[in-house]
Length: 279
Image 1 (cartoon, rainbow, N blue to C red):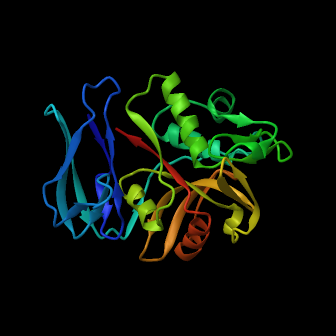
Image 2: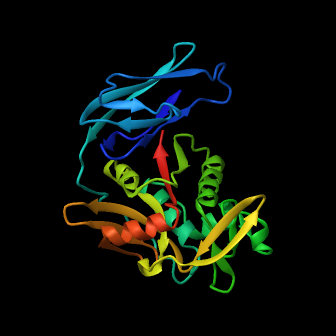
């Protein structure tokens, strides 16, 4: 069994955990315990969500019914800034003008040492729907082809998670997992960065306000598409000077935006984000 979570957590942000149990394991029953519940406490309804309560350290342990366990010590503090050094963002231009999502993913995979190109990720691993876009979910498929503005539209976190999983499965990678962390706050994004995890983040080009471009329903689920939808990688923040550092594949640049603008755009677009975690 593997307990997948972060080593650092802010006192203002909840921390999800993943219990990774092999499919051929004889038991799936497990118990989660915390060494100091005055520092960290499990959610009353969701035992895979931890609430930080005060500064300190606590060890989280998951134990299977056969006694096998894994544990991780988590430091809770009031982190005001963090930055991932040596992160290199790929440039989506000119080859993938509408492929910002898969370019962001490829940049993160490269950061973790995986030698793969963005074009290979598109061709071999990303699910694509070339016709009848709106008959499927943007979490399942990339709408169109990312080779031109006329051919492609984009995708949402679920599709990027599938793309990463397809790559990991093909390469027999078992010690990394892609996780959709959508729905959280900006503080939740910062939690990952302080543990050295770059965050694939949905915003808009130029951080313009995300006006609604269209809505449609697939199998009872309604999706909203935003004007100038864009995906990049968030790699740093500094609450002391109210800035967020982003590595933007639209040109391959790293720069800062104001925390207030980042928060407005990110949360207005349903707080969509994906991370790659090492087990």
